[in-house]
Length: 503
Image (tube, rainbow, N blue to C red):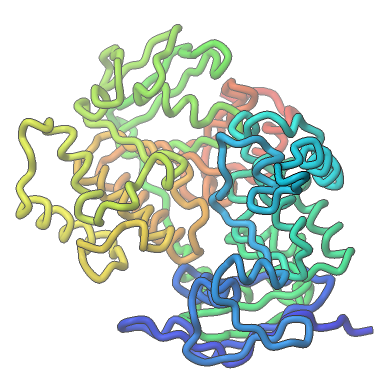
């Protein structure tokens, strides 16, 4: 029996200056299904969702929700009609309590005052449906990203939603947290909710989705049953090229007499990482694998001077170093692209030019400001070198796609000409094409003699790019494997504690 259609979007068109963001796009969502909306950055996914949630106003097209034509004017208007969204960046208030975040703007009242007891009771009841049992009177900031995501989901569902949009909801979750979220999503689907799922994790698409719609360059490429299309065919439809052509990468060649660039000997910070030993040679790419919370980021921050090791020795070019702060590492020709580009990487209100110039300016010192001409020359050079998709260097970096924001951060650090570059999840949350470009860029930098530490949760890209792979578990180095002679299964067994340490 065919499921009832809950939402149809027909002939959707939006024209922005110089680009047609949507070109006669159709989309259909059924009641009680998870429908994945896929495409590279710039394909039109966000624009389509913004039409549905009243952020963008379409030039042409028609939206029908539950049998009635609608014209959302604002996100609040869309929510009132039953369209709720959970965004990649959790848009809640960390200083407010969990219960306040769920009911903000919709607080139960009694005698003209907020009924706090009722708010807390309903919050406990609502989160209990998602198997989340926490103190709802505590501020949200005390809870993990996974719990905050569940709170965001609870808020979205509590407004009597008919359509739930999940925009990259798993980008900051580990595998166990993803499975917990997916259990909730399946329960909501079985209750008759229509769910639109946007993600760059293709394995998750096949795990949770019933149907898939692919957009490319603002146009509808196709709609597929999830079980009737292979991952290879899906990627090909998204990028318009054969995947082998995109990921035709070759590891950097390792020279036997390569200089030792960075070493750690039994270094650690109690409670974070313990007894870490590693070596990184000139022109080598060393991959860090492990679950979120395994100590990958903490090790990188320790090497770069964000946190100070309390035991062991760190050496750079054979000489012991003690970085009091990251600027000390920068002055020793090291660079670090952090995991959370929104929070720790880009400054979204500054231009591409200003963001690229930041690290060079910090290295020179603010008593020696770069001239506007120097900034322009630097920005233009790296916009061209990294093929950053921006109309010019004066575009606000917050308005670029995720992949292009990541390239701006890379440009910032490449402009300092580092000998050692640490990249923490540089391909997270970006599309397949941009991912391949960044991987290719890493390997090209290694070929030119730069040494790279590459942290990633995606084992296939760790194996594809790394000369050696260091595997972390519970704040310790669990094993080290050669990149050209290991499989995802090998790494997973070690992460799960099913294999001994390798040399």
